[in-house]
Image 1 (cartoon, rainbow, N blue to C red):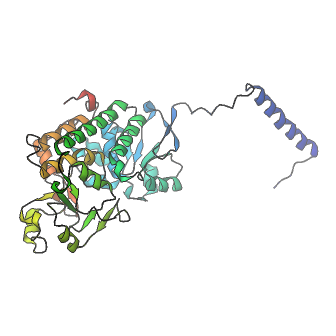
Image 2: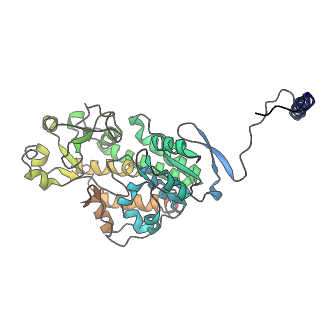
Image 3: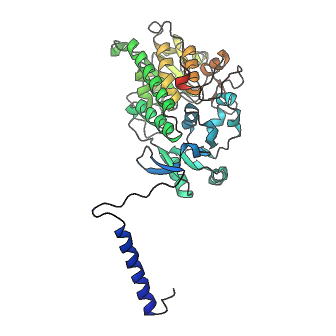
Length: 395
């Protein structure tokens, strides 16, 4: 390290710094704190859901955004910002319904494979202005890049699931300059929950349908009472058969394995699966003795823009109603889940679903690679997720 050439040079540098500080002090009125530095031209500062201040482009300067957590991709359509997507999560490519209305989605790079598993080189090649995602995904991005990150909180109490979805949609509305569309979703969700409650509120606890949700081919993976699914089931006026379980230590937001003996002891009134159907369980001697199977009360979980048994804005708005209609058909006489799904897609996304599209949502098929999918080629569809969604669409 080089030293100053002379004491005179060092003294001169000290005097220069003192003079600069003095001039700066003269420019600030006495007793007034220095103002915060202004955002750069074309940018603004927002506060994400974890309380962090993030500088991002103003809505008119937004061009390229990476959305790296699966259920959040659909919110780009909810606020009409899908044209800004430059990178997303790979799992979204399994669900083809949105591609019918917005074919470009099939070409969007997908560097995020699963939680905290992101191809950083591919993400940087997509050249996003910033990234949006869960805390675990954004931790990885922040550790390996200089990209700004907007974090969606995934640590909220499960009982706040509906408020958390509304807060998330409102944040997207703020980011993309579409607060009216965000508020429309919030009103839609609140209205749906009120309608269900008005029809089920007086049901005594022992008369509420006990629901078991069994996932994977063996149907022995479920959500316990300390997860968001507990509150979606309760919103439907039902009881979670697995309520006694604590599963938050499990994978994927609370999924945990249970034993067949546990399911037999619960003897649920209604079973929801994501593989197979009622006939499959009726042929299986290990399941055929259950009351729900004997009575044919086995349902296949719907799949729309994303899996309905994952925590998304779509499942929050539609799964409780779908479950309530199936649990209490007499109380929901005259309410068509097909029409309500069409209304949601029309008013929130601007998509005009055909009857075949809705059938694909309600009756998904097992894909050859495993997992579930709607019917990607059913119907012709219509719309493009444009500003025709939301308040302008009406009912």
